[in-house]
Length: 401
Image (cartoon, rainbow, N blue to C red; front, side, top):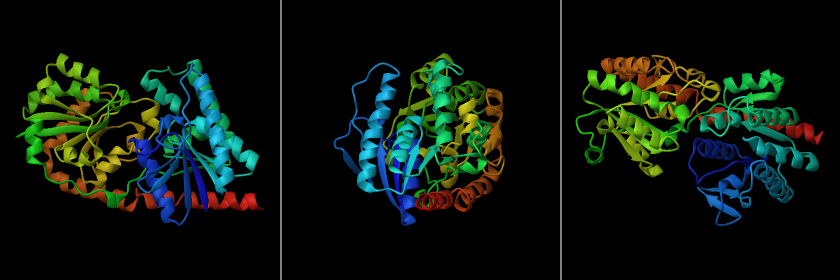
């Protein structure tokens, strides 16, 4: 089986998107399939047209000079289409597998029809919803409606659709796409790649000013939908009840300046540590400093529909967390068993959940074990990636008939 994947971006860039991709590709190769990988101009300018990263070979697309909105997207589609057709003729794949966004699906559909290759489209999120959170559009705007219409157009024309969770599957079905045409490939983790959480490095703890503290924390990108502003809003009341508490925020992103300003405004800046982005190899050392993770995502279409990776990664490491009860979390987390849920959008509910966890440390060993067991038995990449096999085989047989 030869699969040509069409991607928005890939490693060595770091994001949930690239980590999911790398895991899928490695597991597909473990099944004996040949995989090839084309990235769109969103990867940025690369040193070469072909790049080997962590044992995976990526074919890069040329990057044009930026133009006005609309023209950029059209150029991207044409660029990916030309590069894809060249590679498809050269590599002879059995399946073209396009991944979000629709700017990758459109060229895949065109090339697949010209060359007689089955096309599948994997939706990891609806990018119009992500654009709402980033502030580049608003729900119901012309751009939002146009993007949504393009997604639906592509879903109707591909041979099969994959998505990452039940929330997105239901949304796709609501667009009139037959349920038999959609398969869920759940977010998962490579369990062997995660060690159980270790003891905090005392030297790093001193450097961060966390000696003697109980640490709440978050590790990742600071997007608005992550709800870190809610965590800071909960802090004055928490600090009054538990003076030893500190907050450790590891990473960076669009909301970093706003969060720092908020901490100053609330008078808690001396108890909130911003590390900035840290090297990937060092992330586990920072995780080990955190006693309780917080995933306070706000409720919006994106978070209600899409399951994140972070809680699964936390479970794989035997870490403890509280999380808002948005749909994406509820699909992953068993409240009180593998994590603690609280009412989304409520700083009081978040504070209560944190205090409840801190005051009942006797439950922690069982929760750590339950989380690890959940990812070992259910949410591992071997189980998830196996769901591609029957679809690929059916499409290849249909094409050959």
